Length: 316
Image (cartoon, rainbow, N blue to C red; front, top):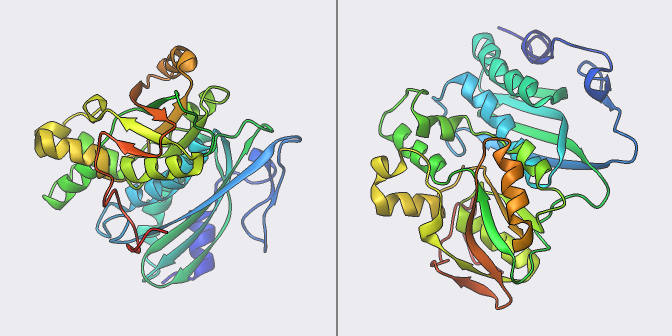
């Protein structure tokens, strides 16, 4: 049996220490000391992933670790931020060193890929849950926000939609092969950090798609005080989605399914070509799926019951 300090020191503490990655003092003290870039604005977000709510408890531990960080980094991507640091709280039903070691492998792998430094955290006993706070930087006035969409703007999305919902359907059908593209999109999502930074100065508003396209589009519409004419036939569907769910099911997954972690943006039409060229350099498509209107509301799709909510109820 491992103590919480054994688990942290043996499996969760990064191999490198010192001031690398802007961490002057990291794991092992009461707080971390970080060195932000002079003149940059700090961007901070927190997400909690709960077993059998956000991910299957029986999923591979390595995928759970990777996914917990990925979904938090997606929020930084939506702001156009350069990801720098994270801290994590891990709640475990038991001190299983083998499970934590494998979990940490996935978490650290994404840290290495994205250049994010794990600067601190906590381990406690309870139902399996992972809280991840991510921190990034963005130049003054360069952050992308949900407010800013203007009538006449294009509405566009990075990558492909419906893969998260399609992957969950594959899992529920008994598929456990992470080589299955849809299952990978669900359990191993790709935070669009480079795309978010590439869209600085071009996008007028942005949000990441975590709770479903219609749900997150609603947040963008309300924050910007605009309406949208959506073109559902233009939605870019994830590979294998139609084969897995049928044409109608695939369209509904793209509209209402969560866990896609693509970026939904608005931008002036005259900036579309440049935005698409920048993302093409990242091997990522940017697809126009509608336009912003002055008239409030949504045309082209039914907005009722638009997406995942933890506590469904009346919307104020």
